Length: 370
Image (cartoon, rainbow, N blue to C red; front, side):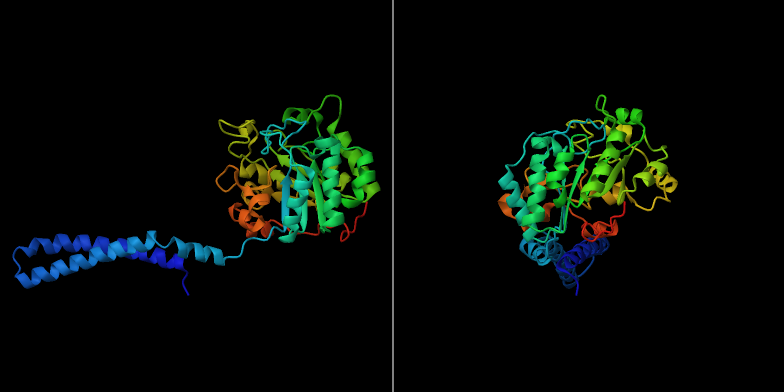
């Protein structure tokens, strides 16, 4: 059975067709009307009035029944927040030139409010939470994110709890205290050449980003945390051969992202970054993927796959809708609940599954072989 929306579209097409036919008929018949007897003139008038009524009625039908449209929309069940990315802070100690979640706010929710929101998400069907930023380990030197990780695993009993970090502020004592509650640690690494890291904005004085990556991999082995690498492919690293280094580090997943522009974040008048100089073409991205096709853990994500296939919560626990090329926030789940807020997320659930968003994400189900 056709939906109400289909019926409206059909009405609009009918209206346009009738209007066009009516115009032609008026021109043709009007030329002979002055020579026609009164009966024929009456018939022409009736036809004109009928065409006019049809146009007015379909216009009214198109504009009026907002309740019916809302009813059909309400009949569609909201997306289940299976996997959620919570960017609880925008603050960071790096200055990556292509960053698309920049330090436009220093706000961080109080711990108990963040826990309340996480419980709401768990009750709505969340199975995986990913804590991101900014840099998650900046807040209370990692204690804040550690407490959230422990809460999600110990009290909410989520199958998967993960963190994305640049890795520069993680200490072994954090693993000793919280490692048992963490399933996956994803560390950002865009190059194995320190000069390129400095160009990108990942350089930090005397600390070598690549050496730190190797140390983090060792701690993940010791404390039973799945190790993952995230790389953003851009103009400065698109020709780099990373095959040998990635295979040596042997992460459970190597997420390879195409550099993405988001209005108001890394492009545009009100942005804190100018990422245009980092952008590469789809062909450049495909070339990089082809060159690394033998890396079994590679998981590629183009701009098309990335933009709308993530459920992103900002520091106020608002879903961010990126469908228009910028981040438009919903109301906070703390105010309106998950079901209401997620309607405005722009989430493409089909693309989420198509890009492999659902995978073996609990370390209890992984065969971690080091």
